[in-house]
Length: 204
Image 1 (cartoon, rainbow, N blue to C red):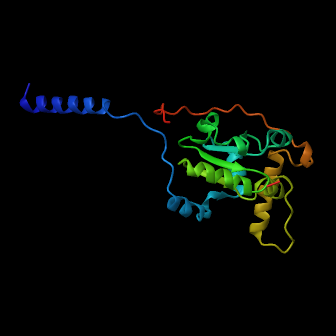
Image 2: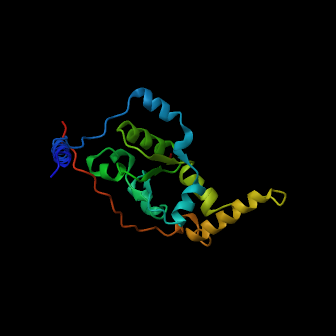
Image 3: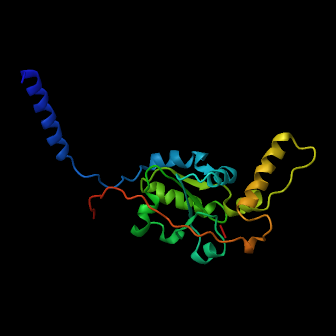
């Protein structure tokens, strides 16, 4: 065997040994106040109801909706495919795996976007990524998806195209022939992606 191959073999063995000495992945680091201020001023965290409805209809597996209202409210009505974590329980260790999911867009919603934005901020402070808020909450969801209003006859073509989507989404989500209280409740089996084991450390 040539000296060149012997050297390459020694380098590979040394690199492999070095990788085994790396520390385990630790918990996410909280963001700094400056980073949080920048994130709060970024309005791109708010997602339109039409955008969310489209992804649900297309069965986008990277979208995960979290309803942060109380359980009884969730049971009365929820967006199909969503999961309930009440705001007051959001930071409990039991729910960490649901919020800290790599490759998933986590979208919080409530009746409006006030409490959902609080959930976003609490989670953002923990250092979690890909967090969003459904703009306008369920109030906007009902206005645009469940009970859309037809545009005026003089409205531009784009308005009628948007309304056509809203009507189709309305039928898809069960709002065409149902009132607010009778929209069927969706049941979903939630699969949480397992993450690497981390080192232990001490009406809106």
